[in-house]
Image (cartoon, rainbow, N blue to C red; front, side):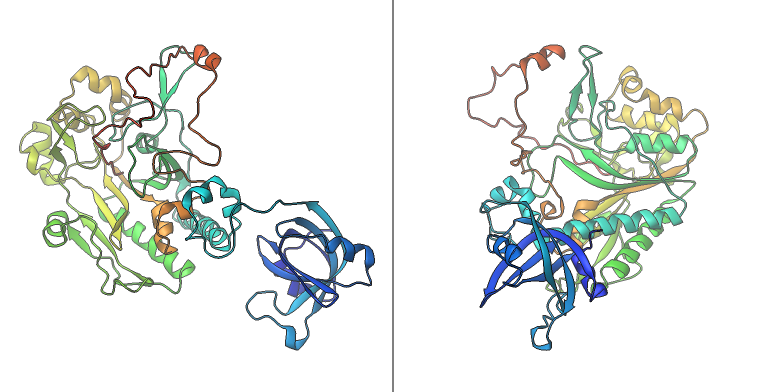
Length: 489
C-alpha cells in the first residue's frame, strides 16, 4: 500500500490509507485515545478505540516523537469536532493497524514554539531535533522554493546552470582561503573557493554567454556577527551586457520572487532607487542604507542600488596584500568606468578611478553585488600592478585568466546574491543561522558533530604535514587582530 502525506487526507475520505510520521502529541478522552500524527506536510488526528484491543494496547504505550506507521480509514469529523486551525481539521483517521518503527527518549530540548528563547548552543548541538520545529521546517522549505523559483526563472532567461570546482587554486581575492593539502603532490595545496568568480569569467571566455549557479563559497574569516565560514550564493554572469542589463535582470527576478512567494510583502518603490556611492555615504553614512519609510513594518521591503564605487583604496596589509599599498575596494576583476579606463592603463589618478561595481541593499543590509568585468588582459594586469604585484607574481597567480582573455573574450558582467541573507530577510528571521539547515557558530565550530577536530597522525604523515603549536598559548583562541578584507562579487 503506498504511503500518503497527511495533508492529503481530506482528498481520501472513506478510503483506507497508510501514513507514517512522528507522534506529535497523545491524549485520552474517556476510553478513546487520540494522537496527532506529524509528517513533513502537516498534522492529522488519529483515533484508537478499545474494541481493536491489540492496536489499542500498543497505542497506550506511544510517547511523543515515536515514529509510527498507521493504516486506517479517513473519515469526516463530527461538526462540533472540526479544527479550523489545521489543514486536516475536518477529517481524522480511524485506525486498523499500528506499527512502531522507532522509539524516542525524552528530547533534550523542546521542539514546541518558535525556539527563540532556547539557548542557541543547545539548538545547534541537537540541530536534527531543532529542525523538527515548525518554524525551522518552514524556513528550510521556503528556502527550497526560492531556489527552485530562481532556477526556473533563469532557465526561461536562457541561462545554463553550470557547476564549478570545489578544489581550486589559492589566489588573493580578499578573504583568507581554506587550503587543502595534496597527498599526491607533496607540499602543494588546493584552495576551497571563496566564490566562483574566476571560473564564471572563464565560462564567458568559453562562449556560454549566460551562466548561473547556486554556489557554495568558503572563506576563512575571523569571527564576525552574521557570517558563516561557508555560505550560499546565487552566482550569475552574462556576456555582451552593460551594468543596466544585469541590474534589470536582478530587479525583475527579485520582484517576481516577492510577488509569487511572499504576496503579503510590499516593495516600497519600483523600479528600485539608484544612489551614487558618494551620495549614500554623505546622506546615510553607509553604502547599504535602510530606505523604509516605516521601519516598524516588517512586511515593507525597500530595495535600492548603490553605484559608482571607488576602485582602489589604501589600507593595511590583509590577506596577503602589500603593506600600505593600493588595494581594491570590492573586486580586482571589475572594470573601471569607461571615462577612467585610460587612467587605469596609465596607472594615474588612482584615488579617483571609479569602478563599474553595483550593489543591491534591502532594508539596511547588502544582499548582492556585482560588476562589469575587466576582460582585456592588459587592463586586468594593470589592476594588480597598481596593487604592488610584480609581473612574475601576477602571472604566477592569475596567468590562466590573462591567457584566456587573449583569445577573444567577450565583454561580460554579473552579480552574486547572498542567498542566506536574502532568505532570512524575507522570512523576518534575526540571523542567517535560522535559514541554514546545519550552521556553524560564529567562530566556525559545528557543535553537532564536534569539529574542527584533530585528525589521525597517519593522515598527517601521508600529507607530509607537521603540527607546530609552539606559538599558541594553552587555552587561547589566537586570532588575527585585523579582519579579513571584505570582497564583493
